[in-house]
View 1 (cartoon, rainbow, N blue to C red):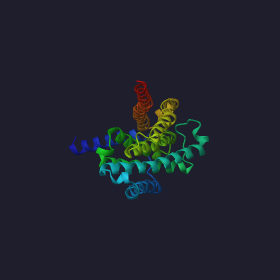
View 2 (cartoon, helix red, strand yellow; view 1 turned 135 degrees about the vertical axis):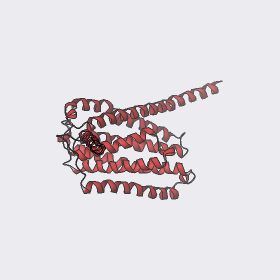
View 3 (spheres, rainbow, N blue to C red; view 1 turned 45 degrees about the vertical axis):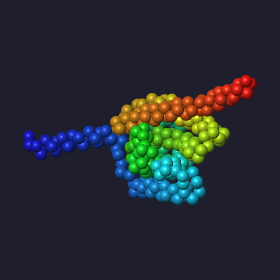
View 4 (cartoon, rainbow, N blue to C red; view 1 turned 90 degrees about the horizontal axis):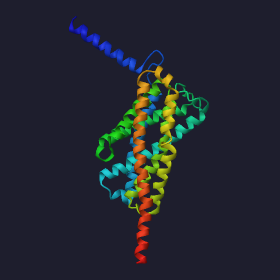
Length: 289
């Protein structure tokens, strides 16, 4: 057999394996319609534009921002942009789930719940944000990066992108999009810390709100999503291998990150509560002496 024929055979074999990984007789990858591409590109442009807007506004309005080093300024602006995405994506996901409750309440993993445009637009918008933020993170990796966040964004783009192409499995994506509800609390606590307000009561209040939001939103998703995957396992097994692979990988990755972050948040909250109590007790003992 000639080398050219052998090479062509290997290429076809590789293409076939790649195709079977992403497609089968039940689900085939579809090209994104033009309006979906425009929405994703528009999201990238929108968030990039916000970087310059927030940088300019913060330079004028915040003395704390003006005194920061450039890397810290980048972190500040990045968090403001992420707040905007968190509010829009959480609102869109919640609205889509509520308005298509008849579809989602069946827990049907293969249900096509894209009849209501809000869910479709929310996923497109989020893919655009993840793309912008991943590039921004890589450009300023020392200040913004971390392998966990890079993997989170990369597999978010891949997973949400596959869901948009199949036009199925949308509940899984929208469910995790709801976790953006905790993002503003994370960012606000960072802003307070950088503004020298760590010893102020408001810092402790936001620390508690951060812990509470994590307890009510992110952590319950760990058992709920596991039950959802198990309940729909037969349907997931019929999908192209990429679907269960991405679902399970994202579940493990996000669960690991959320659990680790929750541990750190809880540890910080306990240190604030019991640390203050211990300090107050020590002060009283000194006065008694």
